[in-house]
Image 1 (cartoon, one colour):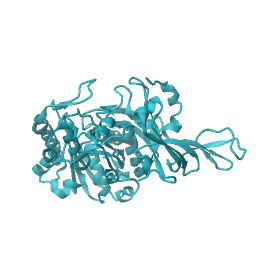
Image 2: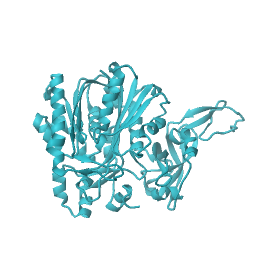
Image 3: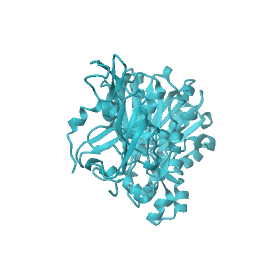
Image 4: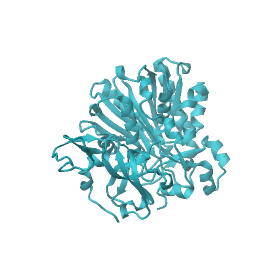
Length: 345
Length: 132
């Protein structure tokens, strides 16, 4: 199968704490922090959106990939916050990356798994020899209605992956599969600025069922067990859900913690599981196996098994790490945050 | 409401998105904007893609920006010497005026420049941010 040739992360500089939001919403900050398992979230700059986040993440991926960018034959960006309803983010990003004009492109949407789905698409195109390299991106400036529980977690960030032939890979893609059903747990209708959700229904019949379903399926197909993996990444809508799934599978803290970026920056929607993957690629060693399962409301999960190759050590040094962006931060007060989110002007 | 033709900016993608400039094929002097004549007298140039790394020559803070930029105000603008030699004027982002210094290292990032009203095209381009 295909593999990852290069990866890159980008997270905006701005943060807001749960305390700051709770003060405005008259909520209990300790209850929110313990209930959601996070303390702060990233906030986009006033001049940032899915296109700019995707471009900056992809530039980091190109630094690591060491390829002729004109050989990228496909650009796919998964997001819930494409800046246009009609006009692709992917063509703007491709133009900014100067990859020429001979590429396939489309923007994808499947709630928070729109980005992971593009890795499957590009892997298929590489394996079928339709392209040499494909660019897969998951990126969001997540929307949340002021005062809604989502406001504490909806964050901004993204990760980009260049998918290519197995023999050039820093991490080979050994298996992938999906688990999908029509489950109305979270949605945003056309022309609506904020998503709606079905409260607690987003848990057991939605996130849990699909993340567990896809993970069980890939373990069965690969004939591997959880203890075979150095790192495990599950989609992170908050800091608690992935830990519930981890407990069910017997995943240890050492396996899950390195990719649990939600605790530091919140839920970056389409960027969430991919930023978790980026975190573990930043520190992985040759031979390490990684299990990642994404989740997109609506609902579905994509599961992946990667094995890191000896090429990963060199690639790690060629661009900023995910943690470099996590640790670059400036805290905002609520009025500044409202301006960043354009809820006030 | 501010509006601008989407096509005018489309013609400038090379320098807006990618920092493509020009290098004199005789003396090697670099320019961000296209020149007809180099200071050495040469008339011919090659295209060069700048690395996006440079240093602040001088800077200022804009409190009352042009209409299209007003929602980003206050913001900082700087004259920057790129590592390859060309000099460029650009907006700075993700920085506070009080933290800026002449000689500070900066790097290029893609950001939104402005929107042509609520229905028009979103214009993107290169801004600079302090190196971290």
